[in-house]
Image 1 (cartoon, rainbow, N blue to C red):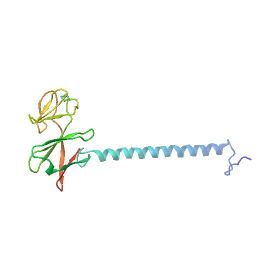
Image 2: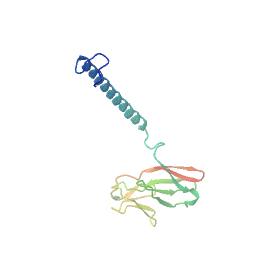
Image 3: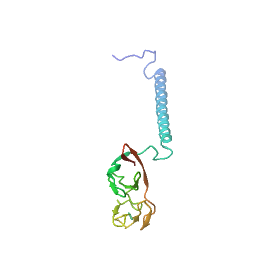
Length: 157
Ligand code: FES
């Protein structure tokens, strides 16, 4: 036995059309509400990511103890897709340079004899501050923020 509508509307009659219209109105408002929430989320994410892109962001990589880096030493840190060099420049400072060539992104090597950074792909050459010395690289090497905590060196990449 079929259930009869309790509001007095007959199936297929004017009451049924009205409840279907109410349901569709409710459904469209629900979609609009969800769409608006999504828009607010996108705007909030955009506002939160604006500004200096690396300030406080990125990943902090522990390089090791400062004492384990000899003065003038250049060490390649193989950190996933963001390899970098750390160079101990004096008693208290360490410089961190990208180890990715600014030409077409080959991984760089160190020429220890000439104390330069060289690219195996097209012979680009950089000094130990990341400046281009020769070859096709269009820009210096990016540097990364270095910090010390309890005698340990950290680089934010
Ligand atoms: S990729 Fe380094 S010089 Fe071309």
